[in-house]
Image (cartoon, rainbow, N blue to C red):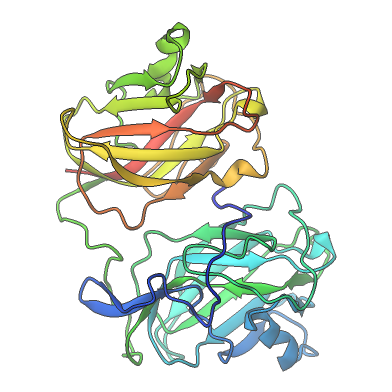
Length: 393
C-alpha cells in the first residue's frame, strides 16, 4: 500500500477561501489564485449514494469550515458522497483533496476516494483521481465537533487530524465536483467525515461551459516523462555518511529494493549527490522513497532536494519538509525486488511515499537528495530506492 500524503501539516492563515500569496497570480494565460479550498461554504451541495432521510443541514457540514460532521447512511445504489457546485461561479483546477476525521466511529472513516469534475450540469463527469486514502492502514485519530478549520493551499490544519492526496498532474478546469468514497474502514458502517478541502487554482471569471486545458506551471515542450531521472548508470557520491558503507550508494537508483545504508557523519545532512549518466537536463516533479526491509527507526522521515546545472554552480532548493509517512511507519519491502513504476504511478505492489514539486519548472542536470531526520534520530539512515520523477530533455 502506498502512502501518498501526510496526516498533519502546518496551518497558516484563516480560510475563506485563502490564496497562497494573497494576490492574483497567473497559470499560463489564466489569471486567478491558489486557494485552500475551491468549495466555499455557500456552495450548493447534494448527497449521492445516501438514503433519502439525509438532510440539507448534514450535507452542508461537509464544507462549512468546521468539524461538524457529515454522515451518510449508504443507499447501496452508488458510491456515497457529495456533488458540489461552488457559489463563486468560477472555473477551477483541483490539485489536492483533504479529508478531516470526525469525532467517533473509526469504522465509519472513508478509506477510498474518487474525485471527478465537469464544466456544467449538462456535461459528463471526468476522472481527476481515485485510490486509497493514506490513513487506510490505521485509524489516525478523531476531531472534536464544532472546531474551526484553518487551512491554506499549502497546508491543512495541523491542530486537527486529516489525510491528503495530490493531483499534481491535473491541468483541466471544471466548475462542479463529485467527491465519493467507495469504501469505509468497516464496509458495513455508514460514512462519516467532518470536512472536505479541495485545494486548487481558482480562475478569475465565470465558467465558460467547457474545460480549459492549461498546465499549472508552464513546462517547456519536448520533455520526455520518466519514472526516474536517475538511470542505473548514474554517478552517486554520498554526503553526510561515513565511508564504510559508501559501496551501497548505487542501490539508491538500481531500480530494485536492494537497500542504501548511511551511518550519519555530522555536520552534513546524510544523503547522496547524483549525476545521471545520460547527460540530459531534466525537471524534477516528484520524489518517491521506497521503504527498506527492516529497522522502521531507520526510515527517512524528512527530505531536502536541491539541484544545479553543473558542478561549478550553486545548489538550488526544489523542496524540503516531512515525508508523508512520518507519523505512521510503513510496511517493509523485501530486498532485491524489481521496481515496476511509471511516470504516473509508483509501484503499488511495494511500500513507498511520495512528495510533489508542482512549482518547479527549471531544468537542471545534477541533484542532491538529503534526509535530515530518521524516525529515531539516533538510528542510521536506510532506504530501498529513490525515484526522482520528471521530464528529461
